Image 1 (spheres, rainbow over the protein chains, first blue to last red):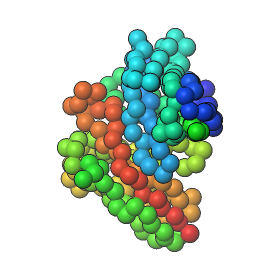
Image 2 (cartoon, each protein chain N blue to C red):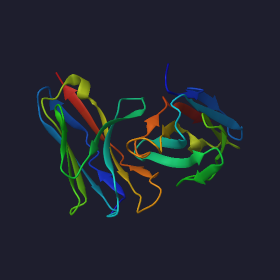
Image 3 (spheres, helix red, strand yellow):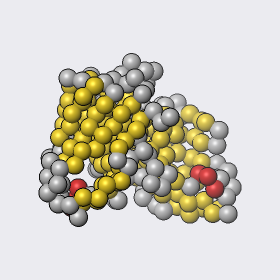
Image 4 (cartoon, rainbow over the protein chains, first blue to last red):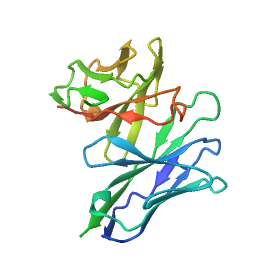
Length: 113
Length: 116
């Protein structure tokens, strides 16, 4: 299994749709999990952290299943401005220094009017 | 003003030339990173530095070198550029003392490098 694997898409959805992205990771000792957003030709920016209990930020909901080594991101009521690439990011650390973020290749989302 | 800046933003050079990409930050973070991004390959770590005297190789360091001149500055050099080093290069910072203990990384705007 690749370290962090995502469905590359692309996902094309109409405004107002609900869309879900999935991600799997290989290192069972990973400690931290994130979703980053990257607009075309721009730098990645943190969208949200992912906690074991699941967390929500407005229209965005992130879930983590440690047993299955699976992370998800749900976007409700999609907006045109949600069009971007979504990167699943995992801290690959197995203890000690927590520097190493491993990035998935990203899932491209286009929200259409 | 941007917290993490990179210069140049775009550069076209020829095979064999020495190139330096520079990164500066005003966030006061101790950790800095260099990544490259290629279509279909995602972001890959080249080098990282926890402090001025602490520099470490990432997963793809061959053909690159770095210098941490000060806590706020981290430069990436290509000693002899080759075409497969054509990519988008990002600098990033993180704070080991922050609430996420350095996990969240803040990226610069990127440098688009083309090696002919």
